[in-house]
Amino acid sequence: MEQPKETLVSLRSVTRSVTLPDEQQLHILKGIDLEVHSGDHTAIVGRSGCGKSTLLNLLGLLDVPTSGELEFLGQPADRLGNNARARLRGSTVGFVFQQFNLLPGRSALDNVITPLFYAKGREFWRRRELAMDMLDRVGLAARANTMPNMLSGGEQQRVAIARALVRRPRLILADEPTGALDVETGHSVMALLDTVATETAAALVTITHDTNVAALARACYRLDSGVLSPLALADTGVSA
Amino acid sequence: MTGVISTLVEAWQELRINKVRILLALMGVALSVAALTSVVGVGNLAREGYKVQSERNGGRVATLALSVNGPTPPDPEKIEKVYQGIQQRYGITTSTHMGQTQAGFQFPRGVTPVSMTIVDIGYGTIHRVPLLQGSWFAADDGQRLAPAVVVSEAFYNQAGRPNLTTHPTVTIPGDRPATAVIIGVVPDVFPDMPPAAFILTEGAAVTGMKPQMSEFKLWVGEEQADVLMAAITADLQGQFPGYYAQANRVDYAAWGDPLAPVQLVVGGVAGLVLLLGAVGMLNISMVTVRYRVREIGIRRSFGATSGRIFVGVMMESVVATAVAGIAGVMLAVAVVKHPWIESKVAPGLTEYPAFPVDAALLGFGAAVLVGALAGAIPALVAVRVKVIDAIRF
Image (cartoon, rainbow over all chains, first blue to last red; front, side, top):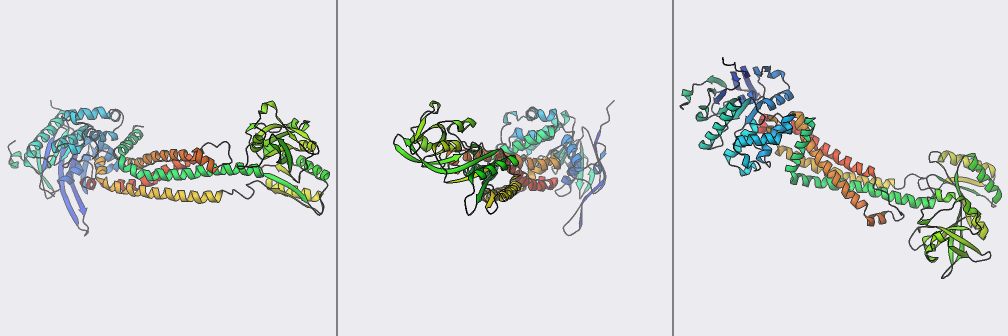
């Protein structure tokens, strides 16, 4: 019998609003209901400015909802303090950004090591070995000592993926991971993310406006004007 | 434990990566620390030199000089009895008579006048007399038939620098010719000083030397000096009615530390230099934090807590200024302990004191404090950075 999947994040009627300088409220997310389980590969598509990144920030505990319930591993996010959220984020969530966001002046290896500075015990003490292993997994062991500006876009994104995965997160959040790459490189990066996430049984949530990227996911949602709705793969216009 | 070590390792990695920027920022701090530490170190050396010189002239802290003056000179026997009585009454163990006169000594090149200081054994302790060779007077030196003399280096040179272990003698010609034994050599007080020598009161009596002016000195504890001064003055006044009797402090510290105002001014200037260094460091740190907003956001996304970011930014500054502090202190030690500087700052010293630990600690402490202050403000800015905005910065 198949084991029930663990719920990593659960959003119920979540809204997120910000106050504009003219005191008006801007409602970015409206009544979002979403559950992410371990092993899920979910894509959220939407046009620029529809609230995709805001949703990703909520899922990654970088932000808190204005209203509604957000539970992370069964714990209500609003009851967690900033530091508790930071620690939970560090140990459970891995981020992959559109612009890679590699730290300048540090080699690929040093970039992958960085999250392990916030780990404890064996993870911290074995940081170099763990980072090298992860660079090897993404096929960049030979370029471990190369500076980011000497790497191609695809290589930089692979370093960013190695960095996101080095602490073995249970939830990988990818914000437009192929946005700065050409189609072919983007495809190989997505394939890599998919493979590594499957191997580590991590949930992968990809935010994209690219329907080709969305088609790689097993579940797909559309975010339009702050409203999230399921999207059949056929609707993306791409054959799965 | 891992948290503390990982914070330090992270701070060190940041320093390694940003070494050029940090080096530039720290150069000012290192030089400021070197200036501050050098001022304290040189001040200490100058103070030590001044103290030794002053102690050789005026006596150790606190030295009292007793005097009784009047229309006619007081009876020498009575005054001697009174001085001894005062010493016993107040339990003072170290004292000396001190008189000046001149005597001719027979040197290989002829008879030369020598400035003689007639003293008791206590003079060596009260004036902390430094010896280049031989020894100061001992208790039985007063009984010698050939009086002992402790001579200046100029005297010793004129006598042909004889070996003191052979008990060399010099002749004092005159009405009562005598032979004196050189038992010790003291450094000259100033360059090209004419020959000088010390002789005990008993020895001076044997050779017929009479002091042209004489005083009596007592060495007392600094805390009791004021009380004793008043008591001894009253005591003397009571025993010599109609005379002007007094006990005065004659040591260099009688009117407070004479070098304190100078050191305060120079220290103030050095402190100002340090402050400027700190402002420069703060300025660079602030600019750097703004430049690193995105990096801070990325680190927060990896799980760095706000406390960790605060400590990280602050530690980076503290670790850097601590290294600059060590460099500054080393530079100051190299400057202050340079033989040329030592000889110019404290020409009266034969042995230079070790570099003062308090100056080194002050310099290092100031550097760490500057690092903490220059790091705290950017660290507060870093903590207030909103993660989402920072990542998109």
